[in-house]
Amino acid sequence: MITLHWLYALAGAMFAAIALLSALDRSNRKRFGNAAFWGLMAMSLLAGDRIGDFGNGLLVLGLAGLAGFGFIGRSSPATTSDEERQRWSDRLGNRLFLPALIIPATALLGTLLYNHTSLGGLGWIEPKRETYVFLALGVLLALATIFIWLRPPAVAPLQEGRRLIDAIGWAAVLPQMLAALGVLFAAAGVGEIIGYGAQMIIPGGSLFLTTAVFGIGMALFTMIMGNAFAAFPVMASAIGVPLLIRYHGGDPAVVGAVGMLAGFCGTLMTPMAANFNLVPAALLELKDQYAVIKAQVATALPLLIINIAIIYFAAFR
Amino acid sequence: MNYWPLLGIALVVLGFALKLNPMLVVTVAAIATGLLAGMDVFEVISTFGKAFNDNRIIAIVWIVLPVIGLLERFGLQQQAASLIQRLRNATVGRLLVLYLLYRQLTAAIGLHSTAGHPQTVRPLVAPMALAAAEKEHGELDAKLTEKVKAYSAATDNVGLFFGEDIFFAIGSIVLIQQTLVTYGYNLTPLDLAVWAIPTAACAFFVHGARLLLFDRWLRRTKH
Image (cartoon, rainbow over all chains, first blue to last red; front, side, top):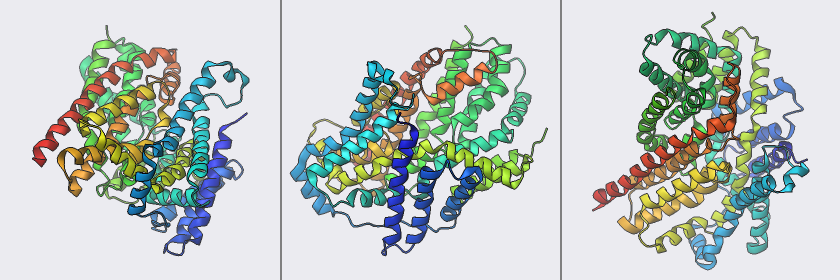
């Protein structure tokens, strides 16, 4: 059966190759820092299950130290010039889109076919992970297509991949770090403490205020922790279940589902949600790393009010 | 009750406010929170390491970068730009409204990992939006270019967040269900997913309206 570990191996091999190419890149002053950073990512993906929890912990400390103390820097692998790119674009035309579309098309058709035909019953793929597996298959098909069609130098995909991943830098690893931080908060009992405190500040009896504090609390905690998943259990135990559902008799489906979406409004407004807000700013080479957040605030705030209104009007019929 | 672990949250907020490196801020906050909760150093580092290892699925998305980089090498961004320049009447706002709808619909059927910032925004949507803006308003200065790119990324986020929960087999829906079960409320994922639809529709109208207003704003600024 194809499991997530196959995908970890594929991504790990890519990071290992990028680490090696980084070490060999004499044009980058920080080449050994880059090599160590992507090398640790490769080790995590390839051997994370064999080095033990403490070993993984040391690996994470290594990543944080390399990133935090400025040991990694942006590289500039040889690529084509803007003029060459324009010439290729003029020559190849819209056919250039086809390899890019192979990835989503494979993920889309693969997932649909696997789940809606008897293929799924064969148990070839780890349940609930089909889309990721077909995503990886799409990547491999796209690479094969490009090689057969355009015949780039053999090392080009790795060098071009290194160009992009170095442009993102440590921000590529931050989301995974935040997920781990959420786990530590839970283990330390931060959720219970917040729940206790939140219950004390709600003015008794007012359904509207309780709903508003629940929605705003979801957004605020999501902003602080960068993750609505971390905020939801806290706000559910603090306000959602004891006050909205039990005391006021709210519909648990509405309180739960729309409460989570109120948290997503917070995700749109926080640098802690690095993969959604900071990574794209880096990917698009924006000068202001908060530019994406600024473009989202005027959508997030009205939607937060709408979510609070949906809970207020739909959960207590 | 031991309130000291709350200092971990304070450290995160402080670290970000001081613009310290987020990798360091998160690591220091995690270790401090664990220690304040009474764990020893070995236990804290092990818990942090295990959690990092359990979340490796997040690193998988980067395998698309070699394909995107390779296509950029052969002029993908140039071609996306020239394609949209041939489309008549495609303003930035209308283009992004269409992308918003596409992103919400695909996320709603569980295909959220087929689009995204590395997969579609950088190679396709942002260059297309820039080309549309330049076709209508002429050369853009650095500030306007940045704004158009930021709106492209923002549209991807809004479409994803307020589409994915309609699909019932997704992490957030499973988490809501599991949390409520511990309090004795046993809901099916479908019960929850249905209630993502009203917000999804509102998100389309709110963000879509902003995108069309962005068109008008660009027109006033440039002419």
